[in-house]
Structures are given as structure tokens and as C-alpha cells.
Length: 264
Length: 278
Ligand SMILES: Nc1ncnc2c1ncn2[C@@H]1O[C@H](COP(=O)(O)OP(=O)(O)O)[C@@H](O)[C@H]1O
Ligand SMILES: [Mg+2]
Image (cartoon, rainbow over all chains, first blue to last red; front, side, top):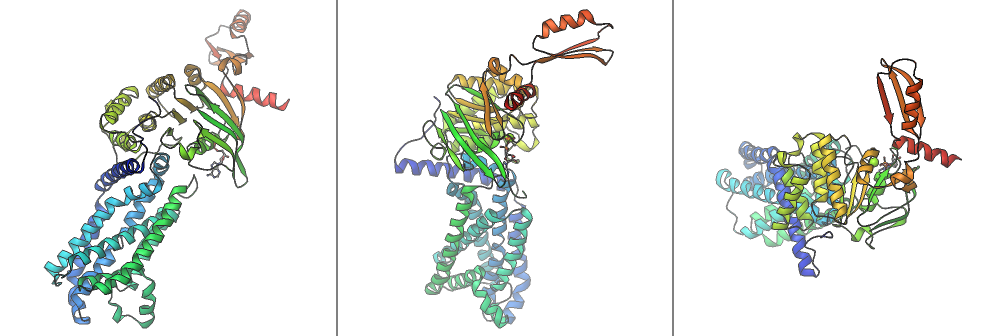
């Protein structure tokens, strides 16, 4: 037997094959993550500490300060997922393994899903832990509409991963990625009101905030925590749009590969 | 099995492939040789659908590379493995990506572990392996699903003796099972042992193709006599035995060492360059 293996016709069989491959990739990428977990742990611990320290400031400065400090820091530290996802994909370029995967049966969309799925789960757990911590330790009122909060978390994590994938696909080196993702993430999240409440920012910054995904994430999360379904929908739709466009570009770029060029 | 016709690939002002044509039958091993930059790797990349040609056609079992994913096994020229992942985990990943399940996967891993002698380090991370061991792992990930077309790009580059032996054995065995194999190398003796068809690439095209006997046998080798670490005489000849006897009978000083060099790839390139120029 030479021309191999479990290849069967029909859409259902094709879907099963696809799920099998994504499962294999996700398992593989989970192993890689687990053997190098430092980055993720620090992004969980840092916001917990900062929430405690910054809470008095927020509560005195603005109305609903508790909600703002929890959601603000949650957004700010979730933004670092861009760099986690980006570095994970960039590492495949450095190791030259991406081309090995491209030769396999799995199309780029499967490769990307397998790559980001473990990070997605981690992010959701991170955000859930931070919200739980916010309720138990910081004094955030327990949200009335849990599914709405969950949906917001899912959408925001999806958006971040799509942006991370896009960045990893277009940068030329780890250096470029860290500049864009760290500086960019901090600018975007703070401009979005994640660090300092938006109402305290200068007028121009309040206007500029509208281009930041961080701004829409905060809008969405604050509305969700308050149980305001209508207020959640617009920012959710905008974020989903950003995610889909970024993801589509990333897949296109990742399908083509990079050849032997670049600084990696 | 593999048919490539008139491939052209340009990188800016560099013409990496310039009318490159090569076909490989099922069960055939083609030893693709040529100087660095001749276009060997570019050819492999096009056949494995990693890059697109500017013009020309490739078919694998009658289909284009885009429709042949999973039927091709590629071991790239440069080591491309996950440093923190073990050898076994690599085989599981690539086996599963090819659609192998449970028992089929287990037995494929078992077979390759024996054939490529991976047993001693199968549960170690690849970052800690020697160059030769990494070469074998890389080949194993290309072979795991028993593809009908194998593209092995310098699979023995920098390899130790054990790696070379294991690699040649597996390649012969897979060809015996009916796989079409493209094997690039800089070592002519490997191709002799594999009984490969030799295809010589230069400046982006194949300039000669034939068996060892057809291409190399008639070329001059070298006989060299050495007296006390000092070269006494060096002669280029197509008849090494006769030449050696003749030289020895005429030697004026005692000879400490005799070297006989069979024609090398460089001799082949040189002869082709000469016939090209004339
Ligand atoms: N991605 C690339 N960008 C620019 N030039 C390239 C690229 N890939 C290959 N080349 C050029 O194409 C030619 C053929 O290269 P290659 O196929 O690697 O040769 P070989 O494998 O025979 O040594 C070389 O001149 C090389 O520099
Ligand atoms: Mg090469």
C-alpha cells in the first residue's frame, strides 16, 4: 500500500478528517504551550495585583469605579494575547516548521485553528478567572446575565487572536512583532480607556478612542457586566467584523508562506 | 508518477529554474545532483506546492501539486523540527495530519523507529539530538504516511555513518515498494549504492540524465602515488588499474601510499561543462 491512508469521499467524511487534523494540531500546540508557560502566568498574575492596587484610585475618580477597574485591567492584559498568538505563529516561521505543515493535508485555516485554539481556551479561562477575582476580591457586583458576559469574552478573545495571527503573518521578525504588539497593544488599550477611565482623558483622546478595538471591548464588557444586552450588541458586531477581516487576511498570507526571505 | 515540464522560476534578476524538466517513475530513484544554486531545492519546493512556478507544468500521478497534498512526503534541506517536542510526538503529529489512526499510526511509528534507528532517542526532545539524529527524524516525518512520491532534499547532509546507512536502506526499501523518489545529494557513492538514475542540474535546468554507467563510468579518475608524505606523481586516467601498474613499475623512489580516486561528481560536472562548451 503506497497511496495512503484514511482518505474518504463525501462532505461528512471530509469534515471528520478536518476535525481530526485540527485536534491533532491543537494537542500538539497545547504541548508546546505547556512546556513554555511563563508568559501566560505573568499575564494572569499582573492584572490581579494591579486591580488591588488601583481600585481605590478608580473608585474615588469615577462613578462605577469597581466595574471600570476590573474590566479595564482585564482588557489591558488580555491584549497581550496578541503577542502570545503572534509569537506562537512566528516561532513556526523561525523553526521552518510552517512549511512542513503546509505540505500536509491540512489547509492554512486548519493550521491556524489548531494553533490558536489552545490559546483561545487559555484566554477564556484567564478572563473568567479575572472576572471571578473581580467579584470575589475587588467587589464587582455579580453580573445578572452570565451568558452575555461569556459571549463577550468569547468574542473579545477571538478578535485578539485574529489580530495576533495577522500581525504574525505580516511582520518580518520577532523584533518587529514585539514592537508592534507590545507598544501597539498598550497604546490601543490605554487609548481605549483600559488604563485610565475614558471620561478623564482629553477630548481628542476620547474621539480617537473609537478606532481602538480596546475601546469597543470595554464598551462591550461593561454593558455585558451591567446586563445591558442592547448595549453589548454594537461593540460585539464591530469586534467580530475586525476579527473576521484580520483572520481572513492572516489565512491568505499563511497559505502562501514566506519562502526563504525575511529576517527570521 | 512525477512529471515536470519546462519549469521556470524567477526571483528578481535570478533565474532559479530555467526550463527544468524531470520525470520520475514509480519505483524509480532519481539522484538529483548539481552545484549549490543549481535549482534543486526550488524544484522540490514547486513539486511540494510550497511555491508556484512562473511557467511550466507539474503533475503527480496525473494531478497538479495542489491536488496531491498528502501523497507527497518532503524532507526539506534544512532541519525543520519543533525543539521542545519529542521524536515520537513529531511522528504522531505528522502521521495524524496524513490521516493515520490508532493501529495504522502505531505500526507506522514502530516500522520507522526500527528502519531509521530512532529507538534510543524516540522519547527525547529534538533540540537535544545530534545533527544526524535530527536528519533521521526529519526523514521519518516525511515517510510516516508511506507517500507515493518522496522528495528528500540532501537527507544525508552532515550525517554520520549510521544515519547514512539507515537512510539508504529505507530509501531502497520504499523504492522497492513502488514509491517514486527524488533524492538530492552531493555524494556520488550514495547514488551508486541506491542504483539511482542520475540527473544533473545546472543553472536551473537538467543538463544530463542517465545511469551511473552511462554518465560516469567512462570518465577519468585519478591515480596518485605518494613517497613519504610527498606527492610523487598524480595522473588522470580512465584505466586506473593499468595506469597504476605502469606507474609503479617506473617509480624511482619507494612508494608509501597509493590513492585511487574514482570519478567524482565534480569530474562529471567538469566533463559536462566541457561537452557543453564544445
Ligand atoms: N526565496 C528566494 N529568493 C531569492 N532567490 C532565491 C530564493 N530561493 C532560491 N533562490 C535562488 O535560486 C537559485 C537556486 O537555488 P536553490 O534551488 O536553492 O539551489 P540548490 O538547491 O540547487 O542549491 C539560487 O541562485 C538561489 O539564490
Ligand atoms: Mg538546495
